[in-house]
Amino acid sequence: MQAYRIETTIAQNGTLLIQGVPFRAGDKVEVIILPSRSQEKQEPQNRYPLRGKVIRYEAPFDSVAENDWDTLR
Image 1 (cartoon, rainbow, N blue to C red):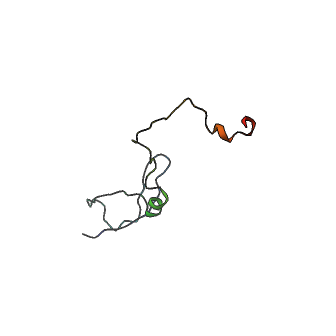
Image 2 (cartoon, helix red, strand yellow):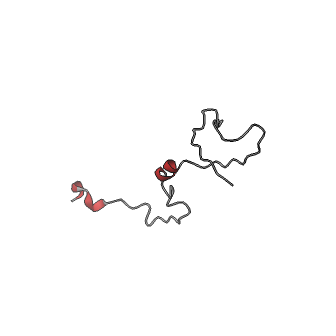
Image 3 (tube, rainbow, N blue to C red):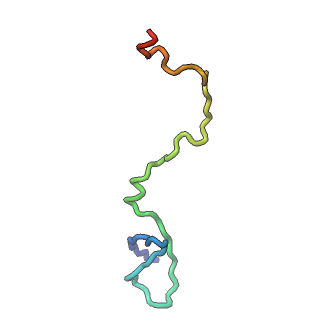
């Protein structure tokens, strides 16, 4: 089976128009839609690295960096 690659852009209304395919009217074809390779490289591998991680607060009501304030010295 021969595969044909055509790059196009999805329209604002969500439709996809493919023109210039090497098939005749009435031929059955299989369509597989993948994101563009250039788009895959731009997206980060892990968009949410802390998702699902356990969050624990140690002394949540204590002051933060209290020793760094010049006025308290």
